[in-house]
Amino acid sequence: MLRNVLFFALLTGLAACNNHSAHQTLDSIQTHNTPSGSVTHITGTYQGTLPCADCPGKDYQISLYDDHTYQDLVSYQGRGNNIASVETGTWRAVNDSIVMLERKNDSSSFLAAEGKLVLLDRAGKRIEGVLASNYELKPVEGGDRRILLASKKTSGINFFASGNEPSWTLDIDKKKILFKLAAGDSISTSLPSPSTNLDTLKVYKTKDITVTIRSTTCADDMSGYMRPNTVQLQVGDKTYSGCGEFIK
Image (tube, rainbow, N blue to C red; front, top):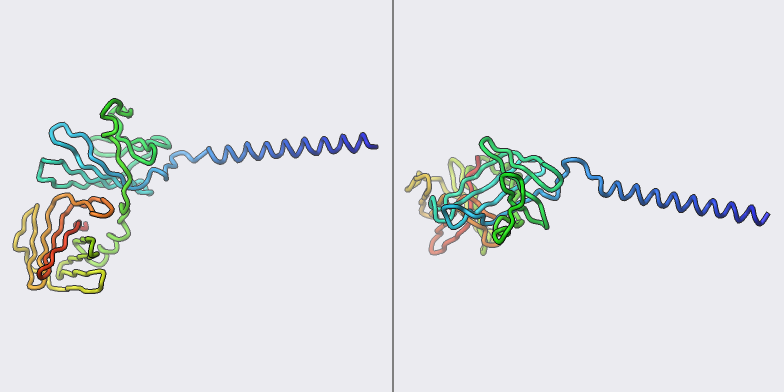
């Protein structure tokens, strides 16, 4: 009788052990077997200064969105008056750590590694040597502005800008200029014809505020996020500086 009891206990223990081992194996498979093309850890905004053959450097920023669209900004230092060009498009996952931007004329591939994006060469390989770190883009906050800009566009806003210390915002639509300080003060005035109206410079003057918009790359002085326009506001004897963009 005692022998039967011991034999039954042994079988029960072995079954429990095997069941636990099976659960561990299943858990391991579920943890590491991620869906094909799942690259949610890659999405975000990254920026850096990339090497340039005929200029000191190329300021570059890219936002990869979770719907597989992207927006990038490029500005060449010491060339073209630092005017920024902005491009949008789609990207696809080559594997779980490499993405490719799909362009009409060419393509660019990036490797996600250690929280950064690394620009790969045309063969899709990592650039090595003493200049390898020059091809790394670091993450930056404030890159996904789609909801904000869509809301502005729905409201008829054509240009939006903001700045810090003190915090302020500027909205321009077809009829008016609206300047707001976070403290509560604001100026709303009719939009005049620009006193200077160039592709690279627009100036709007009213008795209450002067708005100067330059088509030069601007980096937020707190987050570092880059936008394509540099903005300066003159309100009385106070000057406010910030970054902006035209909403299309």
